[in-house]
Image (cartoon, rainbow, N blue to C red; front, side, top):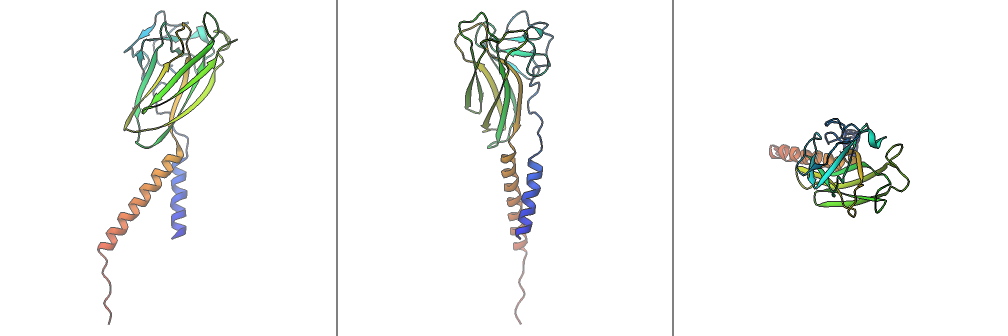
Length: 217
């Protein structure tokens, strides 16, 4: 019996631990209208020019060559157009599952009252702030990209992931790129084990219901 349980655990781990595909669409903002150096105007609330994403607060700006190199690909977004903006995407989730969110945060120095760039990431009534000091980084040649990681627990079958600029009013905001969401393997392992145990219990009940003992002589 112990060997059979061990085999089940090993098999579930093998299924639960491969690299997962990004659950988001267009996580690096590469699919959208050609921004050239950058979009000539800000994108306001409700704008869906970036495939998979919707602007959810004030306005943002979409950058190409003007702020390269980007963290991934050839485009990224500034979460402040001329006011603090936000961008969001809805994706399918499994309640009680933990999801990993990774992204790149950057910015540039110049024309600002402060060099600190701050955003907040939000999902499933959970949130976390991230800040980046852009002092010494400039548009061409280096945005100082910083890799960030967060995790949240889903509470529904779909979740809205939102990134919002929350720094003091400023024309130069936090830049966002390379957003990736994946389920955490450990959670899937537990879910897989739970499913296996539940199935085995049902099988035991079923076989027990039809069992007839032999009568003694």
